[in-house]
Each structure stands twice: as structure tokens, then as C-alpha cells.
Length: 298
Image (cartoon, rainbow, N blue to C red; front, side, top):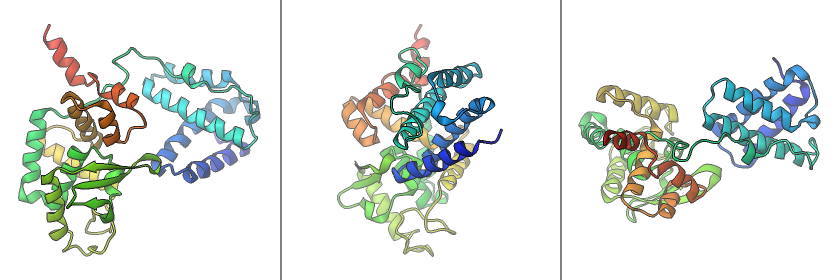
């Protein structure tokens, strides 16, 4: 069902607000998608946005749960609506005192230890992946991509956004621009720093886009697109016999550090988490592999 004129105007304004706040385009689209789904729930009633109430949100949330959406998806939608309602209040569309979204009450509660299950690469998988990456046919750039994902924990969007000025191979430091435009420094292992230098002197120097400000270039563009990274990992996963996804590398990076006793505060800073709570929720004894291993001991 199409949106009302008021709803479309609010969506357009919210889009500009999010972009102006430094949100990445993918994040903006995620917020807008949740709000559009909420509007689809509202439309049969055709009420103005100024009349939004808690029943609208609780009914929407209950519908998502009933339709089988995962708790994380429902909770993301709740967070999006909370941000949207703050925007409506700031614009005077929604009364300041209106209590429409209560994130703490509206989020789906799950049992402790189950909320942040992640999938990580097993040791054997890492060994076979690195062996494939080491083959000459893989190429310097693709080998570097695998090592950057695995040993820095960068998100794929952060990976393709790395610029030459963000790298200091001599000092062994990578400056990463993360979510919300926040910067963090990630130390590079010596072998990874050497790999960066080799790529810069080799494949990249011979590229038609050698003058690009971005580290990763392709044959057709001065900046590698995230879809190209996904396609590369999909191809490598097919050769290895197990699926590869960019976030698996990030989960593996964080989980490995936690298992090896690195303080959560340090892991949080390296990963660019907003707070140590996020690190603890996702990486303290919550991988599916850990749970399967524990049950296997029975």
C-alpha cells in the first residue's frame, strides 16, 4: 500500500537527517526499511503521524514476532522507530511528551547467552583458507583482502573505504573509519604490514588506477566495491567447500582475541564497538561452535 503524502515527506526528511548525521548509506536504507514496514502496518487506519501512540508500536512489534522475524530483526526495527520518533519530535510533528517507543520495554527479550550467537571460522578452516590465499593464482590484492579481514576485524564497508593515507606500514598502524564516522587505530601484524608493502609495489603500482587514493582498486574502478569483496569470498568458499561471509572474519577476529584472554575493553576498541557490553554480548562463550563442543562433552 502506498504511503500517505505526510508519511513520504517524513521519510524524505528522515533520510536527509540520517545522512547529515554521518550514517552510512546501508544504515540509512536499513532505518528507512523498518519505518516503511511500520507505515505499512499503520496505513489501513490512515491517521496523522502526530497521533502515533504506543499501541501502534506494540501492535507492530507483536506482528513481527507472530510472523517469525528473529529477535535481532525485531529489535533493530524498534531501534529504528525510536530514532524516527525522536526525529518527529525534533521537527514538532510529534508532541514532545508523546511516549510512543520505549526501547527497553519494546525489545524482544531472549535468554542470556543466546542473544548474540555468532558463526566463526574453525581453526582447520582458517588453515585451508590461508593456504588458498597463499597460492600465486590468488593474487596480491585478494590475498591482502583475506588477511585484512581476518587479522584486523574490519567490516567490509570499512575495508573498501581504506585509503592510502590511512595506512602506515612502517609503524604498522591502520586507521579505520567506522560507523558514525568514528576513527580507530588497529595495529598490523608484521607479516600483514609486509603484505601491504608488496601489494603497493606490485599489483597496485601496475594498475591503471595507481593514482587512486583508495588502497583496494579493481581493473575497472579506482575503488573496490563491497559486492566485489562478497563475490571474491563466495568464489573462495566454493573452492574450499564451506561458505565465507565478510562478517565471519570479524566474528573470528573478536572471538579469538577473547578466547586468548585479551581484555574486553581492548577488543571493543579494536573492533570499534560502541561499548564493551556489545563485545561481551556477542563474544563471551556465545559462538555456535563453542556450544556444540560443550554439548559434545556430555
